[in-house]
Image (tube, rainbow, N blue to C red; front, top):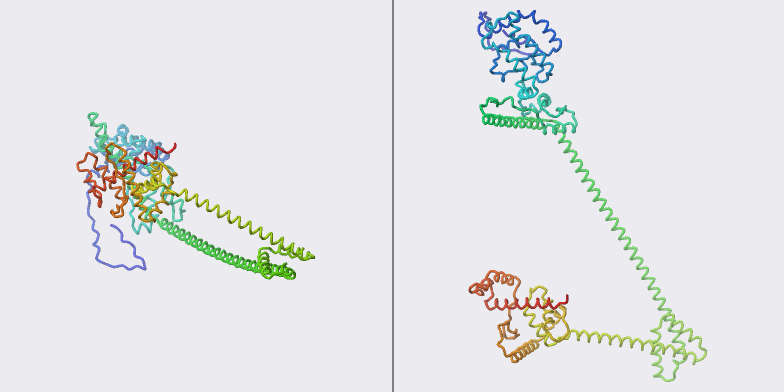
Length: 615
């Protein structure tokens, strides 16, 4: 009977019901487990002295190999037919070591079991086989199978992969697991580390682990390379197949199941690491630190940008202030320079005025070198013109020369010399002016001669303007080439000459157009009278009549529609031009045919112009 838990002084107890009084009941031992227990005790008592020395030697060499009675009881319950379901480590007494047991420890454990449970050894100890249960007669074969599995590296690896004592449970994401993260996940990570192909395996660490250590841990486990394989769980053995096809089918089924279990194992490890990452308090701390770091960087960047903006504004203000000061200084210098120039000018003006007055005084003292009043007025005017044309130095020289003259004749000679120089300067200026006028007149005549168009060129221009409407590529170049190719007289025309002439014709009155039309008709009539052959179908000469309606020019969109319709309806299409006219809104059949003929002639003119150009 179990004892009641003790009650402490600071705790209170509550009574719910009375406990019944203990009653002694006789129990009769019965069953196959009791029989196995009795046999085991009998077996142990007989073999105590015979194998005592061997057991002592084995236990002294390896204390981890157990020899408890419960292991022998376990062996008696084994069935060789279910050898795959048995715990091979427990069969050999390596329950504590399991996958950590070395090859030497496995050999020693098997030797110990052989010395104790081999049928020959039993027989030598006087044990009878009939005294054992019928289902335990061959349990020694289970020991042999366990040794075969654990002695082979590949078979032991396969068995260790499905170790029945290994716990595949993955801790979930919960508040309790988050609160006790290291206590919950550390043992699980350590137990799963045995499957890694790469050594050493980084473990979970502790709460104060650095970011580099935590990052290394999760990087390793998210790329975990497991050696665990599940060939031990194959439902059927390939060797049992009766023929090659059956063996192949068994191998295919086993391989599919291994891959499925391997995939489940990878998913389990990934789920384990995902749950650990979700519950890891260090990740939350690192994220908060990273967030704070980014915020600090952002604040630092904003402060730097603010400081840069303030520095930029400051520099701009300083530049504006320096510019303002420089402008003020420049204005002051300009004002000072202007004032100085004004003073110099006034000074020069005063000096020139003084010199002119002195010269006039000298001339006045000599009665302007003439006695008659009208002539004196004329001399006074000439003197004013002379004085206005002379510079200060010339005035000073003129005054000094006049003052040096002792007689009236000498003074008059100096005066007359200056008058003659004035007349010579005026004559040269007039000659230069006349030469300039003559040169400009000659250039104007040359331009007029260059701009002079013959009647034939004008007629060709009128025809070409109608032939090549607005929207034609390089229209004015094409018109100029057309005029140059068809005119027999006159100078070659460039696009600029054509544009200028067209503007002149647009500004001129209607009589010029009438004259062009009459000349064109007379030329056409004369060409008809000279030829005797019947003229073939061609484009008629365009006549400009003020009374006729003005033909609407073709737009680029209409030109595009016409080209598409010509491609759409070839020459063998019935009622071709009617269909083409229907495809172009606002255009008649006659206008479409006329435009087509103009395009043909334009293409011919372009080809002729291209061939006429020098290579």
